[in-house]
Image 1: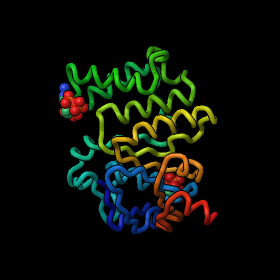
Image 2: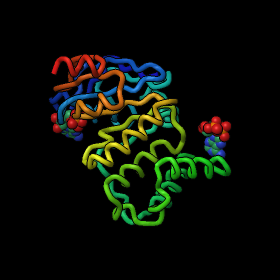
Image 3: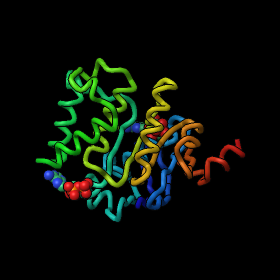
Length: 222
Ligand code: ADP
Ligand code: ADP
């Protein structure tokens, strides 16, 4: 479903991601674990087409991320790290806007909007400005836009970062529910996060891939 070959990104003379190769098979939830600055976000952005690799390649569902960017955008949902500001837009307006960008229309559009609003339990806040919502709700709005077009692959960058324990638990539950029929890659700097939701983890530090293991194997090492 996902394959990278010697994926590399340099910023000036600095190598942020250094010849990283890995595969993610159908049905997998992969943790992408590493300290801050390890190169996680840079890798996630190269999987979604937001960043161009300096060398190497990535493919998703058989589509080359560089050469078939449009197809890749259709099969991938992406939660960027942090909480981007959406100004005064409400979740309803924002999701309508994403539906329009995604080219969803008619009954299908309505069905998808109802599905994600229900799944992420956004009903109560649909008409409040996103900027005034709690971090937990903001993250749920971010997840809602990522899954609106029903993508096969989800790339989630630090999905629970900055949330309180209760919100973390909620978001992990949602990810586990979505994992039933999607391939998911979760970037995180928290070991506990990969133990909670991933069956396999890749460890990255200083831009280099250091290990590929199950959470139990990782816990045994630490
Ligand atoms: P992580 O997500 O693991 O915290 P990043 O992929 O964000 O790591 O960053 C990896 C390294 O690349 C860091 O040292 C970061 O400072 C650097 N970096 C990221 N983006 C840029 C950029 N646009 N220009 C220069 N350096 C960058
Ligand atoms: P599903 O298989 O998810 O129940 P459908 O059978 O309605 O959905 O549609 C199959 C696929 O066709 C959808 O996953 C979607 O990618 C695409 N699709 C269907 N209708 C539309 C539409 N009105 N706008 C954009 N894409 C659509």
